[in-house]
Length: 285
Image 1 (cartoon, one colour):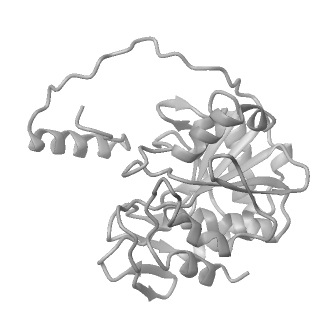
Image 2 (cartoon, rainbow, N blue to C red):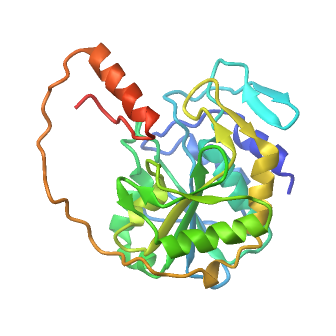
């Protein structure tokens, strides 16, 4: 599989979420033969026997279905500035397709509606879990390649520990030994693996080589993505430690929303402060 060309094919158009899955369906031709669909409309592929769930999402952070005009400068792929690129998360999809081709054991899930701009966020994964909880309980680890830039193995999502330190370090050691220097990273928002924090012990998100996601200045370093894909095929996923307990999380406090910040300028300032610390501003409340 040509990783660069696959990524270019997958990002030919932006893919906004719609309830009828009309745009995500355009990607079916890139899925491996024999893929399945669940009751929600998500796609998945099962390879061998494994307790590992690999995830990606098909939608991109956009409202409209638009042609992407690629600009290629060596190993850098970006756009002409009229649209986003969609590396989030076509990088992850590219990596998963490569791993499937290499017959790496696992269940590979391609979710709908992860981006919050239209779906509200985590639409496909949350509905998949709600409709077939027992299916997902059999996994010990859930892995996404949806983290920005390079070298991160995420240890916190949705303001909660998502994997144990032992798991994160063991995974970092394996990736590093296979040419992708990695470190545990507690400063992340969420991706689809965060949906499973209450039932899958070890959930994480790994850097895939994208910068400025969600913006028209987005670009990817495709050679890094290729390194991650090849390293992922060498990781002994089934032997990684399982230490974190997956238990249902109940917040200690429940705070009702209040319209305290009524001006756009105040919201913007708060958003910028939060972003400095890798914290996510989700809405004006």
